[in-house]
Image 1 (spheres, rainbow, N blue to C red):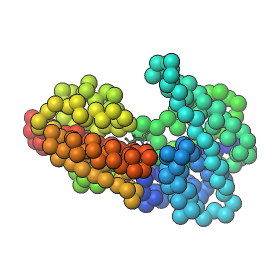
Image 2 (tube, protein in one colour; image 1 turned 60 degrees about the vertical axis):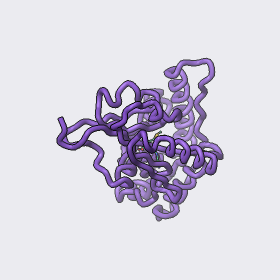
Image 3 (cartoon, rainbow, N blue to C red; image 1 turned 120 degrees about the vertical axis):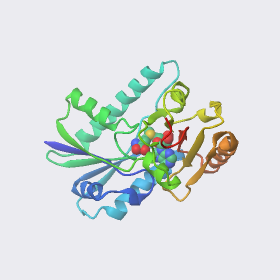
Image 4 (cartoon, rainbow, N blue to C red; image 1 turned 180 degrees about the vertical axis):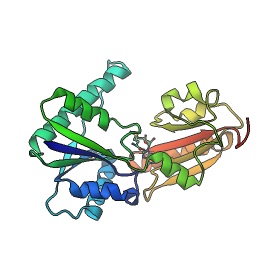
Length: 256
Ligand SMILES: C[S@@+](CC[C@H](N)C(=O)[O-])C[C@H]1O[C@@H](n2cnc3c(N)ncnc32)[C@H](O)[C@@H]1O
């Protein structure tokens, strides 16, 4: 049977690669590298760098494939995501049929960790359900952007004994700070932190974490939000793309 490894590669620094992830890549006959157009070419470059640094198996081969783009026009959010996953599932299916021989192993290099705001596992399950190609698979964990953010700011993720919510910009207003004192916000295209009116909240923001372009800013939300907005816009204009994440927090350790 064919075998697939879904390998977490860390969130930007090639040195995030774990020994388990390096061994998994070296076990693979085919290394699948997604490309996402010119704007995000750097993400594919980091994957190529990881392969050239760590893969010593002379028999392995790299196969690059273009990831279908999500279409949003004239459809609901759910419909748009479902159609997108279906398109990626057919791309994966084609790769596994055309590029991976029987009894061989293929590895997908997944940004950060595959369990965090990533649909590779879901899509692999979808391909299995389609049943046009038989394969088994395993998941290898990776360093997430949340860990990279906390490490760069030298902060623990949670207040003592308190929960943490991981959410998106779109949903931030539903939770912070009424439901949880700590929220990690990912995939925020609308800079939702600007709408939080709370003088006591603190923000820890990071962009391009783990890469040479890493930027971090932190402070009282009211004091630094405009600076973050400006810095973000300038960095995005300079690089042509941005990936950022932040943690919002209210309260203190041992405070009830
Ligand atoms: C599709 S999710 C993938 C998350 C990934 N699986 C992980 O474990 O971090 C992409 C989001 O992760 C965050 N992210 C990933 N890598 C990042 C980095 N190097 N710097 C800042 N944010 C990052 C951003 O919020 C981005 O919008």
